[in-house]
Amino acid sequence: MYLIDSDGKQYLDFGSGISVNALGHADPEVTAAVAEQIAQLSHVCNLYHSAPQADLAEMLCNLSFADKVFFTNSGAEAVEAAIKFARKYGQTVYGPGKTEVVAFTGAFHGRTMGALALTAREKYQAPFRPLMPGARIARFNDIEAAQKLIGPETCAVIIEPVQGEGGIHAADPEFLATLRDLCDRFDALLVFDEIQSGMGRTGKLWAYQHYGIEPDIMTVAKALGAGLPIGAALMTDEVASAMHPGEHGSTFAGGPVVCRAAQVVLQRVSQPGFLAHVTAMGELLREQIEEIHSPHITDVRGVGLMTGVQLDIDAAPIIAKGFEHGVILLNAGADVLRLLPPLIAQENHIREFTSTLQTIFSEIMA
Image (cartoon, rainbow, N blue to C red; front, side):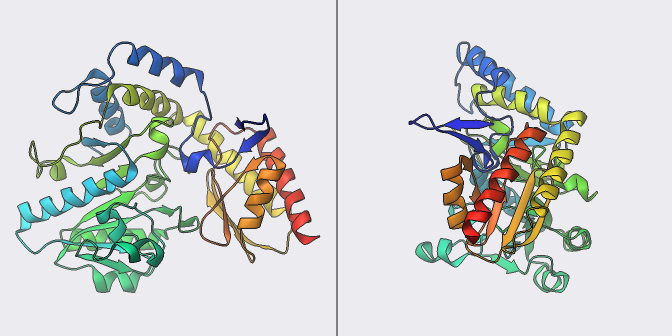
């Protein structure tokens, strides 16, 4: 749960490398698995299958809606794969012209050119225009806006069930249900971006399980590799059938070493007891933050160990104070503290953190 800097100062980590280090730092089981695998086989490229790759794909499918998995090296690459698969599926099944992808305000899907077009933020997009054509942006949680944009030309609708960079905002159940219905009506694919919200972060293995709604494609990354670079696009057989060998690939994706690490993480975070612990610690964290009673805290929201603290001031000074007091904090936009501790956090870590946060707010008020 802790990091130590070059001067020996210790920090309680409540960022997890942006939702990556689900098992904390230097987990012995991950370390042993990586050491064993790299001593045996480190790389064969995507011309071949390896046992760790196949085993991880099987685990992911058994633990989700999916029938097939395409491995990538990052979350942005997983989103790019989802875009390509959706467009190829639309072209194969319905013919030319079915190329539009609908995304939503507040979303963050990555910084590569396709993913960037679906991330409607001026400061990210402006330096790189023109972006990928066919991206359409609707207001998040606005059913009427979605109904206006999703139509016959839509090949995919992509959404984070719980927005991370957007400030820890969960999709309304009715909104997600409407998107599923619209995608079915217009023969579009529903893509859930669970790069930040997946892998147990919300107290269920996948955030979509809170809603009882399944996607056609799901993108996963961050926590999957225990700090090693990996992403994945999970999909149904119907979607996978549109792709053929050579149409998409990646030299390093699905490498044996990172897949062995990912097996350890997935096996651990998918256990019912582990997920129940995440839920309990998340509830305790939000309860403790509510008890700080700072006038600068206007809202505390989240699910599992994915929490947003809405402020009426800029978050940057609080994050800076965090470094002074030995805690690592993240923001989500200018005025939201984003709390994403390792999923192994215990009650004593929660109380240590909130006590420190109380001190920080007291100093800000002074």
